[in-house]
Image (cartoon, rainbow, N blue to C red):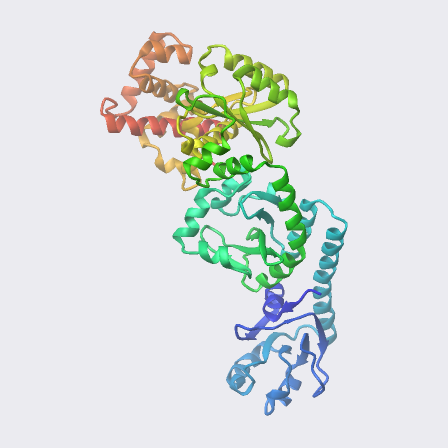
Length: 521
């Protein structure tokens, strides 16, 4: 049966709490009763008592039970503070407003506890019926009144409550978890910097972690003394308090067997070699010997370069649902490739050689469009230690590309690298502040007039002041581009022949181009 501490009750009725006495070891209880005088006291019960009855025990406080909820008036609180030393250190008292009668308070508190006990029973029943993990986590979310996620010990996402998919991401360090189905290196680095990584790894009880804008609470889940998963709850609807860790501990114990089954199922879906590659894609490092063994079936030459492709269904139905003919299509066009099925996508490692063919991307794009598949493509790389980085690039190309060019099917990172850089900056600060004022002035002029001064300036600079190349990309005449450049010279006083200033101008133009497509929020 679920247990509740006075601190937890306080957090749920905080509007009517007047005063609270407690030490760190506030015991948990399962029900509430009226105080009936000096009878035997049950250890797992909270007792409701009036201020008059509490005063009667002032001279012999050892007779009081461990947990008391005292109904009193606000003006009496100073007097209680003066009498505090008379009460036993093992007695914890929560003072509440006397606006409600004893009976009303009893019904209120009983209903509050019954609500959580009822949710606990629903959770147990859902686990017994082997319901979907997302539905089970929805019940956990209802108990904790905040969204939750479940990850295995390799940091791969096992499940999340449905609200998590629609709520604003509560902590920027979890960005990769939502987008790429694993805990990113940014979170791990932040945990190390704040000296809490070891605490999280070793903790057997719920632990508050505060490394971002809002704290979250995490709990390792054990099955027969083996760590199998970790459950986290995020401050989205209300700020988490340490006392809610007691409830998270109880929920985690109920989920232990299911978490073990999920972990076992996930492991069976992946071969040992694929598991190593999966871990590399999550940022884990291995020796060169182990990596080469895991990739021993790769038929391409590393010296020729490698590309990483990340494919997902257009309707995001998941990578595991992709039929075999998609795999065959990739192999037919780019040769044999190692493929790794992930939760939301397929990852392919391909030799770079076929990509030198001028028509390959056009052919791939056409076939992927017919199959409603989207594909992100990394840069060419020549070292296996770059695999994780290139996976991030392919994922970024896929995410940014779908939003910027939804009609396309094949997205190369080189086309979206600038957008990706700006998106990272946006998660840290207001990107408007990173833009040169003169370039922002051009953007505002473009907004009013419908001109394309910023784009013209951008392509002219990145193509090394080549009028013909920039005009070709912009699909305008060189004379038109020259006119726009003269207009820019009249409006801004920037020396774009200076190397450092040129970098700042290009980056500012990239910010403007990002805002036009993705917005500032």
